[in-house]
Amino acid sequence: MAEAALLDVQNLRVSFGRGARAVDAVRGISFDIQRGETVGLVGESGSGKSVSALSVLQLLPYPPAWHPGGSIRFAGEELMGAPEARLRQLRGDRIAMIFQEALSSLNPLHSIERQISEVLFVHKHMDRRQARDRVVELLHLVGLPEAEDRLDALPHEFSGGQQQRVMIAMALANEPDVLIADEPTTALDVTIQAQILKLLMDLQARFHMALLLITHDLGIVRHMANRVCVMEDGALVETGTSAEIFENPQHPYTQRLLAAEPAGAPNPVPPGTPEIMASTDIKVWFPIKRGIIRRAVGHVKAVDGISVAVREGQTLGVVGESGSGKSTLGRGLLRLESSEGIIRFRDRDIQGLGAAELRPLRREMQIVFQDPYGSLSPRMSIGRIIEEGLLVHGLGGTFEARREIIGDSLAEVGLEPEMQDRYPHEFSGGQRQRIANARALVLKPKFIVLDEPTSALDMTVQAQIVELLRTLQERHTLAYLFISHDLKVVRALAHYVIVMRAGRVVEEGSADALFAEPKTPYTRALMAAAFEMRADGDGAVAT
Image (cartoon, rainbow, N blue to C red; front, top):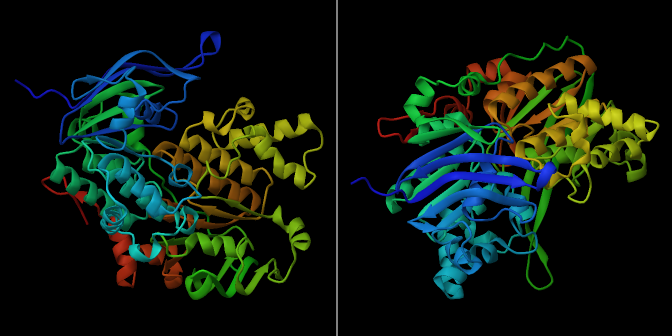
């Protein structure tokens, strides 16, 4: 007899609201996962992937979310409608989840040691010393450097990729039977991504763990999943083995997903185009404080003497591993972080300007932050969030005129203008990323720092956003500082690229030259991880 599925989901339905205003987010999907198997759940943003995953652990907010029907069985036990006490026993122990947005999922007031230790105290009843040893072991396991020295650090003191690794360590703490990974490598650079994927496969083999992998990155699914389920508009449109789906897709939607990939190249920048943003020997150092009186005993040199120049209509790509200083460089240029060195915007030295003097320039210098949910106020509608910049700078005229401008901005990034009356929690991760892009673009700036603006987007929307950014750049001669771990997107957008490591630039050059012939071993390793990842005969990830 065939072995019973470890996790069996049948006819799952999820609705938000009731009556005429109900929205059917998941419409009768069925799938199962065997012990030791990886099932990929793929589809565009808003297709219902994360809602389905959250339903397994009964983590959807009630109300407004509810289940009109369906069954979720774990090891033969029905979870739909199970007592809360029983669900608490399973969550984080036998079934664990890596959530999509790390910073929003971590408590900003607690150290990472305390947050990872919590699941060990609750489920394993460890004492403090045992828990600390296990936390250090887990942080080393997920590749977080200097784990012993950073146990007391708060989540905001880590880069986006490092926050994601903390989340993964927390999920793996109790060696669960089922791991639900919701975009587990979204914020990770390509080399760490390969390490994390290999780590997940090694742990899966060691503990015979079932893995539900939710991602928009079809390359990851192809290399990791035994079976694939494709979702569109809350329904499963195609299922099959990984080979069947990727080599012979039957549904038009699956075919469209597989064909979508950022392509093309930016329009060349004419010689002699003036610089719009430049820095000379910029440094951003963060003090390391210890002791009762919190004396500085050293510094984290996040940006350590970098000189860059971005011309009108040009895209400067910034790549490097998580924690290399990419995001800090962008914030430093915009004077959002204290720094040393010269910063010039339109040939004006802005390093010594006060807040009042900087404010008129802020309209022309915008940023799209890495974590869309954390940068959108949960208390404000999307319309009010985007309108805020218009009000600060006295743009848009009347309320009706501003609503029209906001609607146009949402339409530019692929959202419906009517969505401006909804709130951030009502959108998927990819939709929130598009909202963050719209908020920056609505002011028609001249220079934008794009910090991982496509990291949470599925492949079809990535291609749309890349084309949109190129179109807007040509139309308004926009200059971009484009920070990304996705080198395929960087290649499609950037004119010039700098490669960062440990706060310094290790290589730079035109995008064509750098991608064609990288000179340093570090850059070659990045390129290999991004473009040469493949599956070996056993399905393991290799580079």
